[in-house]
Length: 172
Image (cartoon, rainbow, N blue to C red; front, side, top):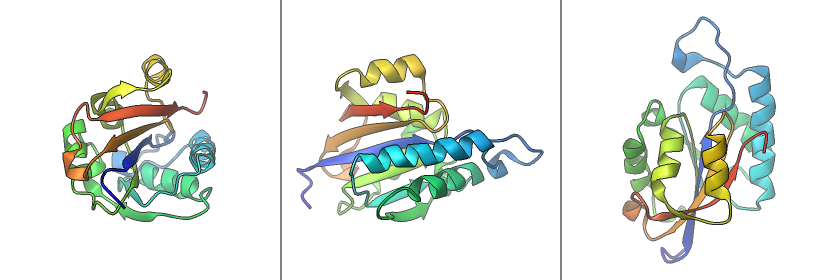
C-alpha cells in the first residue's frame, strides 16, 4: 500500500445512549441507539470499503455501537479500544490518528461529541457535493458519521488536509 493512495477516515459518533443512574462512561445504548447503530453499520457496509482498523472509545455506548455496526460488515477490521478517545478534543484525536501505522489505509474512529464533529470540521479543508452543507445543517447527531479522505502518511494528517466526501445520519 502506498502513502500516495488516498486514505479514508470515518468519524462515527456513538448511537443514542440511555440515562440510567451510572457514570457517564458506563452509559449503555437506548433501544433507538441499538437500531441506529445497526443501520449505520449497514450503510457503512454498503460502501464496499474494507476497513483495516477501528479505533473505538472504551465507553460502554461506543463499544455497543461498534459491536452492532460491525456485525453488518462482511469482514471485521482489527479493533483497538482506546481510552484516549473518551472526552478527547479534536487535537487529541488528530494526535491519536497520527500514530496510525501507514499500512492501515481505511480507518474508523468511533467516539463522542463534541470531539468527533469538531474533528470532521477541522480536518475537512474541502468537501465534495453537498456533504458539508448536510453536516452543517444536521450537526452530528447520535450514530452519524462523516467520511473523509486524505493522501500521505498518517503522521501528516492535520487541520485542513482532508476532503469531506460523505456524511450520513440516521434520519438522512
